[in-house]
Amino acid sequence: MCFDSEQTLAMQADNALYQRIIIPLCDDFTDSGAKAANLILANLILFVAGNENSSLHQPLNLEGLHTATQLIARLQRITDNKTISQRHQKQLKKICVLSRVTIGADVSITSVIIQRLHHHFPKAHITLIGPTHLPQLLSAPYLHHILFIEEEALGLERLKNSGKLQQLIKKEQANLDACKFLLIDPDTRLSQLGLLPLAPEQSTYILPSRTDQTSNSLSTITNSWLDTLLNTSDYSHPAITTPTNPHQTQSSTFTIVLNFGVGHDQNKRVSLVFEQQLISALLDLGEVNIILDSGAGEDELNQTMTIAEYINQRSASKSSQGTFFRAQQSVAELASQIHQAELFIGYDSCSGHIATACSTPAIICFKGAPNPRFFTRWQPESKNKTTSCLKVSQKRLSENERYLLIKRIFAIASSHYQTYQQAPLL
Image (tube, rainbow, N blue to C red):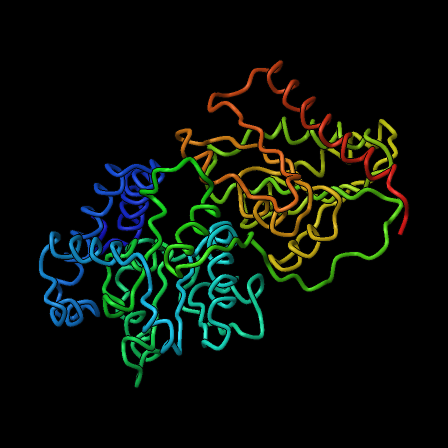
């Protein structure tokens, strides 16, 4: 059905396959879940490559990869590549790093990888391959970008276009021996979680993000993997590039940025009533400036417009010291705004990871985690330890539970506000 000539039916089948089967298996963060996902993806790759007109047909044939067992065995061999040899490190000229595609994962994982690689190989040419948000959030003089995919492309659409990615990486490696080139795969959907042969095995290294047995965050797992890979001991926190520098002077107004985006996963959202009541409560915090980001897509835009209408009606009947407005902006503009704010509040989404990467204090309502491992893996990692992750029940909250959650958020926000008020102006 995923390959049906009827486009609507094919899109529905594609969504069901990835959203209901493959992604939940990956989000399980277990060996069994990873093995099941790998087996499904390997068979999908072979099905697509079976068409002689497919861009995958010739590359897989040249590699002698004709069965799912062979694809999975190749992935295991790459995973077993633990440390880059000293000979390889000394001769290295170019590194290609694949994006994790989603913004939150690129902040938590990819930003750590490129920092560590540049620090260890300061003379190497580093190229980051992925979506259009990369140069907005991850840019540096040493970093080159190749924009490869559209973020809204579906899973099988990416798979059918993977031959183009193979050609792109082949071009990057042109005239370089295997010992002078590295492909770093952060366990990305671009490579179908490492199953696609994008570069020689001896030049390919993959982050085992789904099978790590520790109880650490993905940022910590990435650093530990890089310690082994580079045969060194170091640590880099997630970091992004924002268009403005940290503010040098302290404003008299405490700014809170809110983003209720959930990346098309409604399980992460508490409720519209919760969002409206939370902002109403925060307006009574004191002299605060509350900015509600409009999120991404039409649904989130409409959601924030409904919230804004409610808040404006509330303000007409009840006065408060706080001010409120809604902002529609790009990812880079949102990152800049979060960077300059005193507090960020939102769900488990890219904005929370951006906030912690900016060292902006944050309160994350973490709802929709399918298991405890998911909650641990995706907690944003804060360098200055000012991120509060509040685990919220999967079930619909009762009125009292909603009240208690808002009360808890208000208490944390109040603590940040009081600290801000007591701090001397610079």
